[in-house]
Image (tube, rainbow, N blue to C red; front, side, top):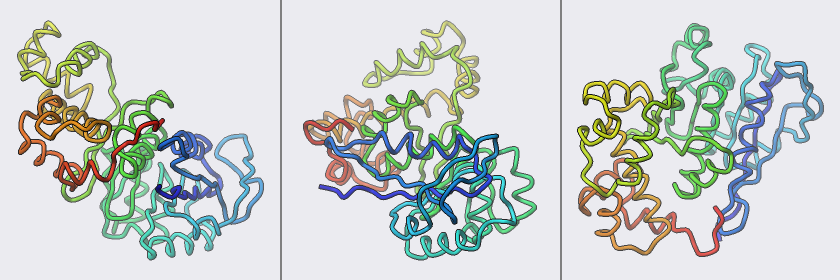
Length: 321
């Protein structure tokens, strides 16, 4: 039985209330084999009521000892810049030095940068604050056009709802795609949208901005085991291949064939986690065709072979996660 993963959410006043709610909303819904996957504690430098970016005050029950006790530390959005409590910065430095996973949502990246944790690393933040961020922290390799970035043990996300994508990515990394997709359904969010490459920098799909091809994507998801082409997708959408490709990119950030590959790898992950099918069957049913193709694409996505992935993320009977 895995131990419950301990998460400290650091509120830096004035805190962004929406961001502050995300980790508990997403991670708190995670169950694995009927047990909670995470224990989330919200903390701050001085426990008690803290200011927020809105008219609300929020009572934060825990102090920074929660950071020292955590496996993952998440700093949520804040209006603070130069006035971050020294204790918060010191706690974040200790966490990172100990190899803990340290993440930020939205403008929480300013706090990580002020602690010196982002120098020389790739990171992102809320796009509207990207110019200010780059001016303050030129040593950070800012990527303002992505939802979240993973660089070593440090993760940063863009603003507001991108924090949901980040937290779902954490669930997927810790407990697998099936659990993360189940949590996404519970919180009525888009399915997990990972884009991890060999360099461990995740560039997930941007939010889908339209619904014009939603029916075609749903149709394709029911036929991932078939050899679908762009022409097949265009015929279903009753449009030209050229128009389909443009609209697919506008709505998902990917070409049709890239999107299909992304979905097929996700299907393979779920089959490996939740069934005892052979590798040949997983490859065929996910549309990856061969075990060699399955191994290649899964290893590129996760760094694990199919058998190692199954051993790490198998969901046991009775799991609700």
